[in-house]
Image 1 (tube, helix red, strand yellow):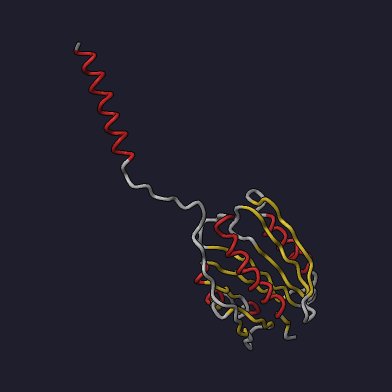
Image 2: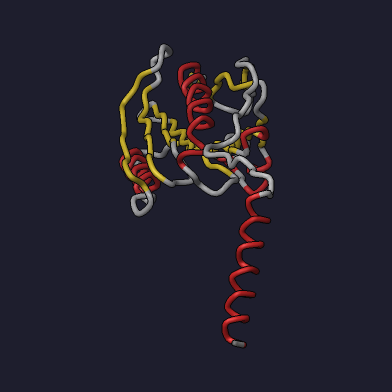
Amino acid sequence: MGKQNSAILTSLFFSLLFLAACNSPYTIKNKGYSKLSFPAKSYQSFNQASAPYSFEYPSYAVIDEDVNKQRTGLQKGKWLNIRFPGQEAIIYVSYIAMQPMQLDTLIRDAYTFANNHNNMASSIADSLFQNPNGVEGVFFTIGGEVATPYQFFLTDSTHHFFRGALYYDATPNQDSLAPVNTFLLADIQHILNTFRWKK
């Protein structure tokens, strides 16, 4: 008889627990990511006397030249970071005043930097381009769960080599970063299309 009472009490307990759970409020779970808002597109000029290049960059971005504090000689004043505080992203920019016969090495290095993400990338595509000012370069699009979806380099093949790579401060997530990638791609394209060598 004791075992039967115990079974009845256990059954009653779970029935009451089930009924109590049915009365608890239901919370809708989000199936996607929060909608992001972006600033309106507007651009300003980067045209410093110490730099052998100029371009237009977004007004909501910040040029950070602190990277030059550790540089001397020919490289000083020509490297920079373009920060996007609202998107937690940075374009790391390096500039090389080329020496004779250095072009092949710099191009090979640029491809190596892009291909370093092969283990996480679902795709890597490179495309040649020439902007309206006659500046030529290569643009890399890197797909998948990578921290750097876009890289590029520009060169006049004799004197200048300018390389950039977009990185995020956040953990890579292809789905959540997709709208940010699209937004910043337009800005990178504007930088490249307005880029010119001064000499």
